[in-house]
Image (cartoon, rainbow, N blue to C red; front, side, top):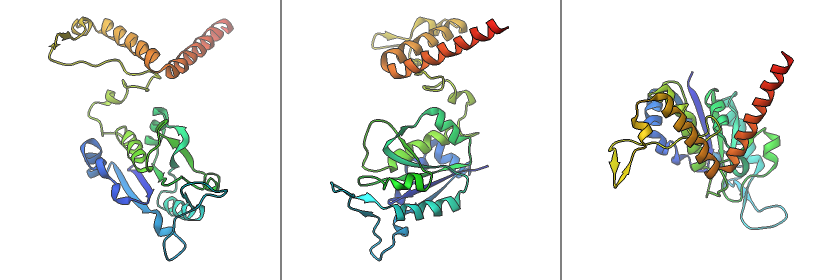
Length: 246
């Protein structure tokens, strides 16, 4: 089954962009995924093809109109009826690797790219649209975020990555940051590869990687570490509870 990506945007020429290269580009040529772009302006209701208007209540900038957005989403859903619709917006929930895996396992995704001051809020309930963001940053439009989300999905599709384990031992896959990586030369500018990684002792290497993964997560991403330890404690508590019941 081909993973079908549909992009609703004012700038369809931005796609596939960098996704025509490397792993994603090869996968596109091999028809492991497909791409349709929908020009939002095609669904404007007037001869000037107007897609935005001033904010209700006043304020700077312009807002994408609900009637135009709704018509474009309806068209995209006819192209991919089973694909979830995600809107790129800094007001959305930060997308996670777990959500990316869910999307990659499905039939595809429709990505709605915002511009100006964003979307008329009514579109989210009126069309069951999921709001997502890349993080606490503001972009000039949703297209770069859409490209990033697509890239994250495509690399997980069957047969895209050469080594099946490549997508498993990575940051966020187990709730932690990935351990540090090294390669030859063994010494560079007086800095050497940790001795344990040169030992050939796979048990010690695994233990070192686990410890570094935990340490780096605790120091660099205390939010991830807190969630990880909470989940670990809940899992341990459940295991103890089951043991007592037995």
